[in-house]
Length: 335
Image (cartoon, rainbow, N blue to C red):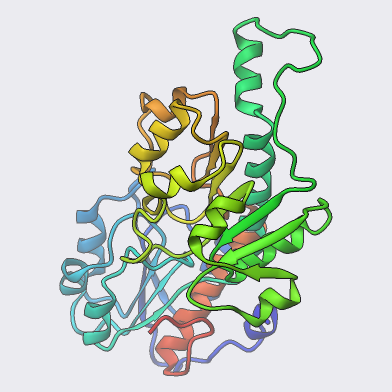
């Protein structure tokens, strides 16, 4: 669908070249190529991350913003940009960094980049399941410390075969995870959320309560958005309901887990292991105690970090911007 939409880009008036701010110097060329044909590009230069002041200064007077950095889209940014700002596109599927009420109040169109991230993030989830469940990090530590031994029951892990996999949030990413695991001989798929989904039936996944998912799952995968409702959803009480042989995977947002509670649960072997692509804060300090645990496999929020996925995200953001400027519905709108 995206490829078809990119072949039919909106045409802006020939006498108008709107100003578009790209908030990071490392924005993929695929998105720049789309925008540069009809827009004047202003691009942040700060590396590896532009400062908030630089972004605010550059935003003054622009018609559109492509949000490609960390930080908040808040009232301060919107005030700095000015009343002429027509649309914003964030290269993320999550929108917890955006003051939605303020954007809506100012009648600014807002787009994001879901769907194109599903495959890459689902691949990452499966990779974390294998790495955490099979003790890859602990195995590396054993080699580094010259503790590699040969005996039948050394570094035994948790099978995916025959397991019960519970998914918190059966959106596009959750569905893609189940599709990938279909060849792993999983015994049962469970999911939880606000209500059952037709896709759950198609994927032969059973809708259960949050508590039932925690108590019955061998792998618990977080793939829901961060909202006030899901903030610290996985807390001490939730972790206490999980099996001592269970593996917790988070490819959503770090704040969904009470990280201190997780640290304690892993230190006490209350659960078997965790695999995290997201954490809090980001970047995680090098001396953080989670990094010292053998039963915690952590990667630096790279779930969407493939060449094709990032190009698709940049292209979709550019498409959203052109559509917003042209006054037509965005391909993937938030507001």
